[in-house]
Length: 110
Length: 116
Image (cartoon, rainbow over all chains, first blue to last red):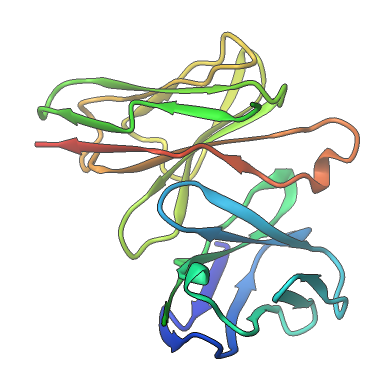
């Protein structure tokens, strides 16, 4: 059975802090790993990672994948209150089967 | 604007009644998905469809049914056989054309179903 473990499950920080969110996985026929941000309703796509060691960046967010150790991290620098959300990690196996983790609830206080 | 529309946003039903959740997309995506989200849980796959008139069970299909008569539409019926139907339901779609293997899922805004 495919497994995804995200940590921490929740995190409270102050604006300006840097956070690192973790995702470890065991997925049969791994193809890629996706990160999503969910505020109140629809999860919105952040990154798709397919290769180890290649960092993807979008503004203050960045992510990297380690296919040998089976984990990924999502970094957010200089956090803002608008970063408050649930961050979901979803590795993909064959036949586009995504397995979602439980998510990390990030709260950024002013 | 292109996107995925789920309706209604909130739905209340009595136990024992079937209820159908709507999902429409105008993104011209071939594949569509239904997920369920419970507090403290990840998204769990209920059903998915890669092409019109074809669909497959996901991890938690029991008590649910779907149809895919049109490319744009993928309604989900929560039947009375579903033991714990109260949840947040998310519909998603993605392209499967060229480069489709690396296309992300796009989600609707969800329907929150409460059954009492």
